[in-house]
Amino acid sequence: MSPLFSPGCLYVTPGIHALIRRGMDMSSYLQRHTQGDWGHIDACQTAENHHAIRHGSSVRSVYPLTPCIRLLIETQGGSTTLKLSDELTDRRIRYRKFGF
Image 1 (cartoon, helix red, strand yellow):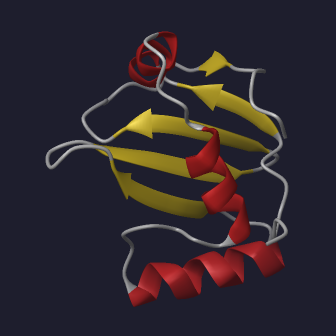
Image 2 (cartoon, helix red, strand yellow; image 1 turned 180 degrees about the vertical axis):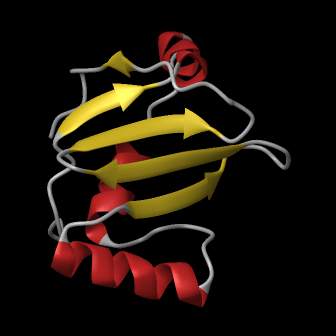
């Protein structure tokens, strides 16, 4: 399946960066996000994502990593941020290791 949009510049929060350093591969989640498999979102958010792709606003995905922690991915304005659901930080690290 081909991507519906480009993720642009990639950013991760400190929690995601720590998981990547421990060997967790986030590329499959990013691929799903850009291909329109937005994980555990409701019908309203799915419709908003389709609208966002057509009009250039935020596309959001949610993927469970554990029963209590979810991966949140948001693409907006030419950049994509990956963060954990329990992270309340706006701090981001530019990340270049994904193959997009």
